[in-house]
Each structure stands twice: as C-alpha cells, then as structure tokens.
Amino acid sequence: MLYSFPSFFLQYRIGQLYMISKHSHEQSDRGEGVEVVQNEPYEDPVHGQGQLTEKRVYLNSKLPSWARAVVPKIFYVTEKAWNYYPYTITGECSFLPKFSIHIETKYEDNQGSNDSIFNHEVKDLEREVCFVDIAYDDIPERYYKESEDPKTFKSEKTGRGLLKEGWRETQEPVMCSYKLVAVKFEVWGLQTRVEQFVHKVVRDVLLIGHRQAFAWIDEWYDMTMDEVREYERTTQEATNRKIGIFPPAISITDITLPSIARSGPSSAPSTPLTTDAPEFLTVPKDRPRKKSAPETLTLPDPALNAQSMFTSNKPSLPNSE
Image (cartoon, rainbow, N blue to C red; front, side, top):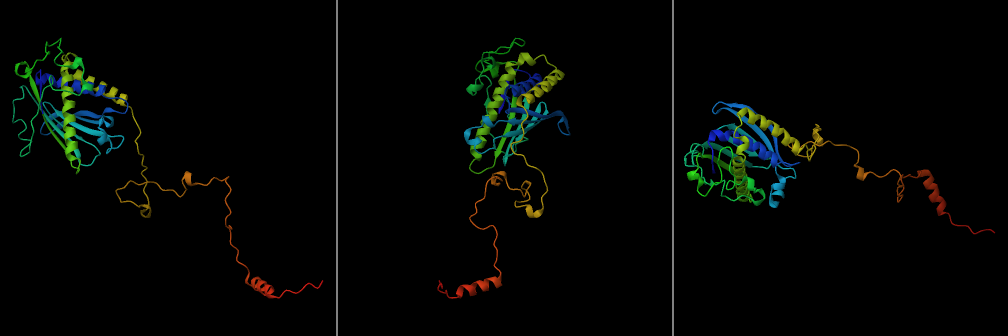
C-alpha cells in the first residue's frame, strides 16, 4: 500500500507519533481500544537505535457478526512495533490459531514512484500494489469528520490543504508511506474470507490515520522529539486509564495434581479437585428423608428361625372351650 502525504518524511516522524497516540486515545473506551503494555528504547544490530512498543488492541465489538461467532468474548490483538524511522516493522497476532499480520513501512520524499522499495523483502512473492489517496478515497461513513477532510482542511501554520484532484502530482512538499502488508489465517474454510477482511480493515485504519495526521498538523508541527515523546507518554497513561482494568474471563488456579487425578492431556490446565459435593447437589439438612426402604438390614438368628419354622408347622388345635 502506498500513502502519499503533503509533508517531508523527516517532519512526518513527529506527526506519526502524535497521530498514533491521539488516535488510540480517541478510539478507546471502557473495555475497548488500545492498551499500551511497553514503550521503550530498543537497539537493533542491523537497523540501529529505535523504539519498541507493545500494545493490546481490544476490538471485539468492531468485528463483523460472523467473526464474533468464532472468537472469545474478550478478544484482543497483540501488536509489537519496532520503529527505526524511516523504517518500521509491525507484527500483530492473537490467541486465534495460525493468525498473524506483518507490516513493514518505509518513508521517502516522493509521490510513490519507487517500485522496487521492497524488492529485497519479497523475493519470489506475489504482490498487489494499491495506491491510497488520503483525500479522495472513501472511508467508512461513521469515521468521517469534516474537520479531518483534506479536501476542506487548510493548515494555518503551513498553508497546506484544500487538496484537489491529482494533488500528488502538484503538491510540494510530498512524501510517501510505503507499506508491505502480509496477512495469514491458515484455517480451512475461513482463510480467504478472513484475510480479505483483515486487509480491508488495515487499509481503512491506515487511511483514517494518515488523514488525521494531516488534519492535526497544526497541533504537532512545532513539536520537538522530546515534546512528542512526553505527549506520547501522558496520552498513553490516560488511554490505559480510559480502557480500565478487567479481571480475566476465566480464572484457573495453578495446583499440581496427582497423576491419577488428571483426566486430560498434559497440556490441559489443572483444575483443583475437592471431595465435597457441589452446593446444588447437597441435600438440605432440614429436609426429611423418604423411608421407602429400611435403613439397616438385620439377619435373623438361625436357631430362632428354626424354632419359628417348627412352631408354624404344628397343626392347629380346636379351642377346647
């Protein structure tokens, strides 16, 4: 995917960090949104100094009905990003089996004319190139805001905006965000449908994000890197508080059981056992028991039994009276 942007790519580094933090905060609410788990400097032997960020994106309510039917009620995607600007790597995965998203991004000062920018990363792989226009491509109606429309917005600080048809060819400055997106969901019967759906979601999210980065340019244009990092930190803390902390949907006690008590495979979670009957099976103490059978069985004495049999065999004598 190729996203052109009316700015220099070195300026956009500030705008990218600002946009991601503000967008995440706006899209988050109690139980839904983006929780930041980790955000710290990271050094790579190849790419050098960068920033490692780990997030949990809770999005159950944003899934279509057919997808909600096959995922847990509390569903989130774990996102890890390595930002070595102007090169970034984003990997996303969930606890769904065989599902992953991998995004590589490179930024250059051009209109999207570098056709070989990812040739080294995708040798012998089939690709589909998609140009995305932040001003004239459609976005979901529920996300549209007139104040964030590049066709009607004009920056007071830079004079950029009011983008017209064909703006990529005439706008100065202009840069391009090149994104290599790979989606895998290797589940028979759902693979094509899920992968196509995720590609569309990724495209829409990135399109909205780039529109917002441009519409918010007056907010971040004069920021230094230290200032945007401080804004990022405080906004992430506010976003985490906004989402709230929830107990897990399933609580499992980690207790080691004797081997004879394990009825499942070794990979199954251990569940504590008890000899007490569950409450719904316990007979109330104040309820009388039905005596449909004797509670004890007494066997007769053999001697008495023989005497009884002898007595019962005597013929009845007539009453002398």
